[in-house]
Length: 505
Image 1 (tube, rainbow, N blue to C red):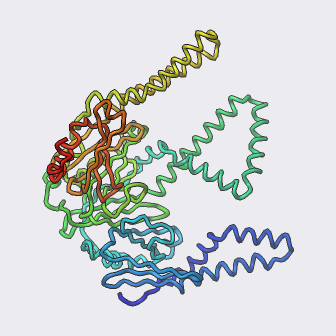
Image 2 (cartoon, helix red, strand yellow):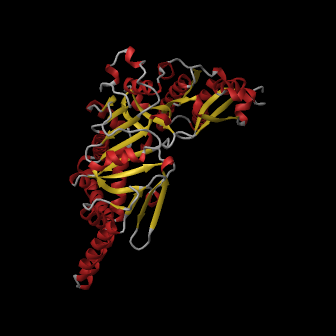
Image 3 (tube, rainbow, N blue to C red):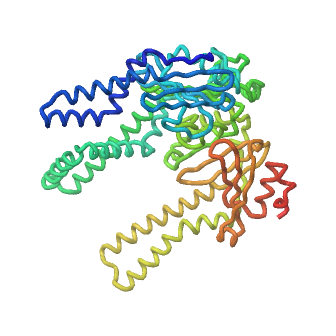
């Protein structure tokens, strides 16, 4: 495929629609201008130019895949050329919006590990779905052999019960905020806000302020919950995480295989991970398993209360934050653990006990959690002695007691969460409470170490050990480890550190 190719001709139907949506503010402005001047030609001219530009995009977009590079040329007035070495390709993703799916098309994106966004990203928008297996196999041929119909092992499937974790995020509130911001940008927000304020004032006179505020809060929360559930369903519904290997294997969920199958040779370092999810907008990701360096279990406090967790991949060529690294959305923690143990082939790294960081690290968490409540308590006590204890003082002490108890529970949870483990070629670090993380990193992928101590850490004899790697978020921390153990942990993980002058300190 060394000749320049065009995208699917069906994009002649899609590009004009996308261009109209992209230029919608201009089209609305042309309608306003036409109404003000009495000249209806303005909106028709703007619409014609917009559709024409959309059609021209197809004629001015070509791509080529040769033995060394994959190249893309696009742009109508301003030409752009993007060239990516094939040996730098780390992943291939496809993205099918509703209009693409109706026409049998999909957007194919190439990932190299760099955060290329917008016009700098390499994306073929769009190719026919039937061409995707051949293009994926061609693009990943430099890194892994991808069969067009590989036999694989299903690691996880989406379940409707996973939706119970969706309301525990802030996605619904963020969507409400985005809608309000868009309304104000379009000029409708002020009018709607005035009407809502007027209706709220009238209702407050009839039923009381407390009732109106309560109904408003309950209504907002209900809408936010509904939006969060709908977003989670549309984004992650029908999720299938599958591991494909060159050797045949039966396609069964990993939770149904026996222990003998878990330790079989099919779980080597070869093959690819295939991730597919979405209901209205279907996305597919293909990852080279040989570039997997571990995984991260994320457990936000509310999700953890329902025994849930999210699983992220630690992989070279995949950014460690955001949706690009998500293997499983919030789901039962046992499912996330089973998938991670299957991927890294180490049950103890996922479920094994961790080494505590000692009393000094625990005191730091108690001190930071209770310092502010203690100062607030002293301030309230002084105020009570000076001016007495009015009615608001009773409420202030009640609030202070509730905050103090919450901070104490938070500190206790942070102490229980803190720990690390170094065994069998895996570094495991866990920390956090509001969002607890358990990072499982392959020692073979660690390329550097840093031991950092702040002034307060030096006073109590602890340090933060940072492992540098080319995968994921690039650095992983072992927080508040005893200072005398920091370099020994690094030496256990990376034998070459033992020869360093720092290991003896």
